[in-house]
Amino acid sequence: MLYVTQYNHGILIAAVQGDYFVAINIGFENSAGPQKHQAVAIRVQADKTIFYRCSMDGYQDTLYTHALRQYYRECTISGTIDFVFGDAIAVFQNCTFIVRKPLQNQQCIVTAQGRKEIHQPSGIVIQDCYIVPESQNVTLEHKTYLARPWKNFSRTVFMKTYFGDLIQPDGYMPWQGPNGTLTGMNTCFYAEYDNIGPGSDKSKRVKWPGVKVLNSKSASNFLPSMFFHGDDWIKVTRIPYSSGEKPPKH
Image 1 (cartoon, helix red, strand yellow):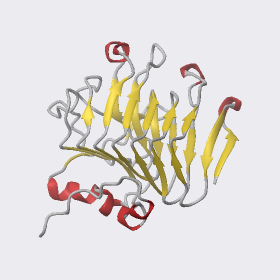
Image 2: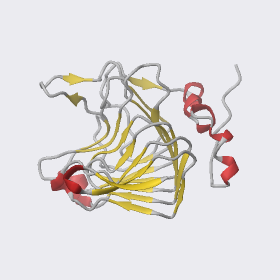
Image 3: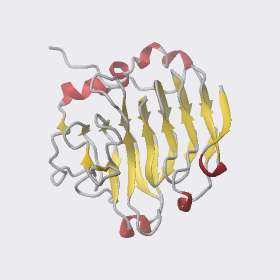
Image 4: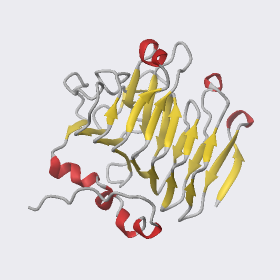
């Protein structure tokens, strides 16, 4: 089921709460602007949900991947701060992430995954996608990062994705708690595998224990067929879907 509900500042958003929900060619937008800070366009908290050729537009916290299994194909998601966030088991394939211009004193972060326990299966996988700026002013005036750990065991994997030149060389930034402490550097799981583009150079990435190096075998664990058993529930819909390469034999 798709609901329209109220969030911060009386701003309208959509909320998905029914399993097996499929959206095709639908746009979701929160037009509050960067000055309203947190302003979700859509919150998804249903199992085996699929979004195909949809757009999610906003600024801070655009897409709330709240929980359970979610698949995004050929979607466009725009925003500024943590604009894809939540604790779902979410896979994005052939999507475009557009970084917009934030307020003058702000930086941009594409993802803020919220895994709370190390044994949770949740995480964000971004595969065969594009991360690009809305305009050249974003690249020149504001720092942009791939991720920051919203919760201690935040997990995000970028695979075969194009990174524009807006991505900072260090790649990731820590989460600053209310008392000013920085968290998540040791316990997160962030990884990049076989990405391309001017922002994909990993030589100057932060050296946190939580930033991992994947080879072809370990990367295969994050392919959709392995990560959330997508073959079992996506193929039947006939929506374009790539299982990924077969995992290497032992």
